[in-house]
Length: 218
Length: 256
Image 1 (cartoon, rainbow over the protein chains, first blue to last red):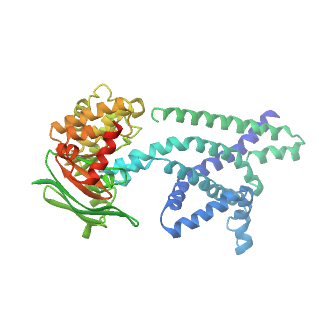
Image 2 (image 1 turned 30 degrees about the horizontal axis):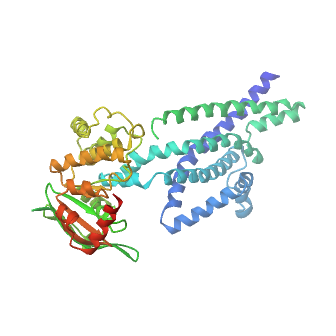
Image 3 (image 1 turned 180 degrees about the vertical axis):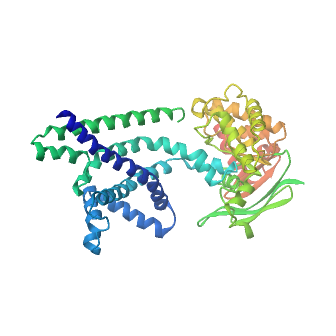
C-alpha cells in the first residue's frame, strides 16, 4: 500500500513541481518588468500597475484562481481555458504568475531603491552608461539584498501551489485526498507534508548557499 | 591657454538659485581650492562640471573647445553627456566605491568598459596602469581587498586612483576628507598634495583651511552662489579684502 500511495503522490507532486517551476520562470522576469513600470515616470504605466499590485496583493490567491478560471466563462460566455486538465493547469499557472509577479515586483523595487544614489553617480562620473551601471554595479547589489525576501516568497510558493486544488488541478494534495474516498484512509494526505518539507528544505539550503556566496562584499 | 574656462554658470533648484553667475578659469597643472560655508554652492559647481546636474545657464570650455553651452546643450542626450563627463573626474565625500569589486577592480572597471566600447580590450595595459596608480596612492599591498576591508582613508585613496584611471583633464574633489576622522584625513591630504606637486589640474572643495593654503595655487571664496573673492591663498587667508571673507575665516580661527 505504501508503495502505491508514494507513487500516486509522486505523480501529484510532479504537477506541483511543474506549477512551481513554470510560475517562477514567468513571475521572476514579469515581476521585474512590473517593478520597472511601477517605478517609471510614465503616468499611464505607473498608476495602473500600482493599482493592479494593490488588487493582487489585497485579495486572496484562492479567489484570484477562481476568478481567472471561471471568469471568462461567466463574463464572456467563453470558457477561455477549455474544460480539460490542461486548461485548468494553464488557468492556475496564469493566476499564480500574476500573483507572484506582483509580490516579486515589490521585492525588486525595494532592492533597487536600496542601492545608494552615490553608486549611480560614481558610475556616471566615470563615463559609464546607464546600462553599464545597472549591469556592472547595481545588479549584484540588488541580488544580494533581495535574496532573503525572495527565498521567503519562493518557499511560500511551494506550499501555495496546493491552492490550485480549488479548480481541480491534480496536484499532490488532491492525490493524497483521493485516498480518503477510494480506500477510506487519511494518512496519505498527511504524508504529502513530507514532500513539501523535503522540497522546501532543499530550497532553504540552496538559498543559504547563494547568500554565503555573496558574503564577500557588503 | 586655459585648460578650463567657465563662464556665467547658473544653476537653480526650483526657485532657489544655487549658483548665480559664476565665471572662472584655470591653467593646466593648477590647483584651485573653493572655500565657503555650507550651501554656498561649492559642491554644485563640481556637480555641474561633472554633469551630475545640468547647468541652467553659462558655458564650459576645456582646452579652448566649448564642450557645454546651456543655450543649446540643456537637452543633450545621455550619450553626449557621457562624452562630456570624460573631461572631468570627481572624488566624492562618501567615496562611493563599488562594494563588489576589489580595490583593483574598482580602478579597472570604467577604463575596461570604455576600451571594450572602442572595440579593443587593452586589458593588460589597463591593469598595469591601475596597479601603478594604486601604488602611487600607497596601496600596493591592498589591491585585492574589498572596500569593506579598507579604512576610510584607504577607500578614499582607491577612489582617487579610480578617478585618475580615466585620465580626466580636471580632477575635482568634493570635501574629500569630511567623512574621515582626523587621523585618516592626513593620509588623504598627503596624496592630494603629491598630485598637486606633480601638476595634476585639480579643483578642491574643502573645509581644511590650512590644507587649502598649503596646496593651492589659487583660492576662490564663495557665498550665496557667487564668487566673493579669489586670489593667491596667502592673500585670501591672511589679508582678505571682502567683509564676508573676513567673517567666514574668522569663524575658523575662532575655533582653533
